Amino acid sequence: MKAITYSANGTPATLKLVDAPKPKVGPGEVLVRVKAAGVNPVDWKLAAGYLDPIMEVRHPVIPGWDVAGVVEAVGEDTFDHSVGDEVYGYVRKEWVELGTYAELVSAPVRTLARKPAGLTFEQAAGIPLAGLTAYQSLKRAGLKAGETVVIHSAAGGTGSFGVQIAVALGLRVIGTAGAHNHDYLRSLGAEPVLYGEGLADRIRELAPEGVDAGLDFYGDGVIETLQSLVKERHRVVSIADYEAAAKGAHQLWVRPDTTDLTFLAELAEAGKLTVNVEHALPLAEAARAWELSASGRTRGKIVLTV
Image 1 (cartoon, rainbow, N blue to C red):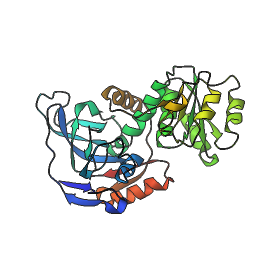
Image 2 (image 1 turned 30 degrees about the vertical axis):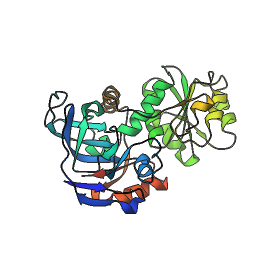
Image 3 (image 1 turned 45 degrees about the vertical axis):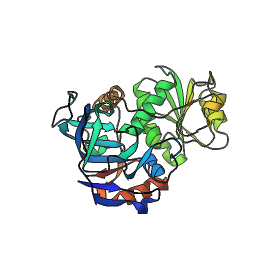
């Protein structure tokens, strides 16, 4: 099969399109014919070695965790999916080695769910990591209908999913973003507020009684600001500040979860979760996809078509 690989830590220039062995399919796994693979910042951060202290990496690496495709084979004692099923998922395994930037990927069934009907494979591949991160952050904060949440970096990939999911759950959403993204946030159902100096005062103007929880999807030292706004300091969740726990907040690392993926698929099918695919590039242009991701100037999702 064709796959993108890298053999040592490095930059997008180290990526190569190669012929790789067809993955083995173990018990509790299925073989997925990849139609699209989502690109996320963690992909190139892993390649750069940023996560070496906490992640086991075995070279050569096929990068990628997000996938949408069709089941081509099932492993022993695997009955969750059948050949021909359209699936999507967050295929994070015990170590980094055999990812989704390939024509085929073996995926534990715990990482997959049925692909949302009505979405293209490219749209579906843009959901898993970012969508699960947003949803699991909302759950970690213990939010329920009628409460108010502040989402920091609400116009980004994870933030825009967070806004839509929160609105679908009946929450009031205040979202931080640059002025050029305020109309976009309004279209998703959030009340936009400009980030930067004076952020806390601007949020208090919108919610003088305080807010119930805060989600930090950017990691620029905003945890203390969010804690000054929430009614209970522990109801702040960060995915980007690795000192969050020491500050009395929650630090979240997203987990594969079939039930959560199914919930997101149902939201998408109901028209409550949309996916903006800004760039859909062929597999051979993975390096270009990483450059776009690292630029920080892409609002929508980046996916590789296979």
